[in-house]
Image (cartoon, rainbow, N blue to C red; front, side, top):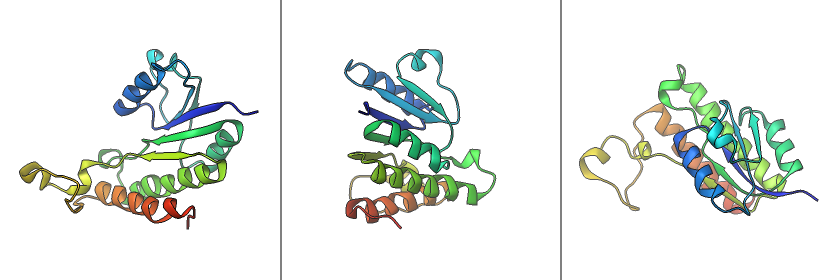
Length: 164
């Protein structure tokens, strides 16, 4: 029998650290993580298993979902504009990697996938006008566009239990 766990992709970032701390406060929660960077010691001690790797490695994702009963995936992993010299790397990681995570989640039986988008999808106008749930997206960078594309992919396909 597989152990039920929560999987966090991109766990080594600031949001990942806060999420680990909050989830670990519930002693019944088992957490596993995947990221390119190792967790700091104080967070490593809060998780059950840490995988060093990329969401582009579909076989790693499939192995994790085969080994564990992943109930929820918090998908935080993304490449940001300063990290990418080539816009195609943003698309490969942020859209292709998200597709890998969604496929592995569906095939592995995860019940919930939580995707983090970015305020960047609203463009620079948010600095002047603010945003709410009715604000249309207006990406003005390759990073923001890649997050919009990933979000649209999930909205179009996850709700239908099918992926391209």
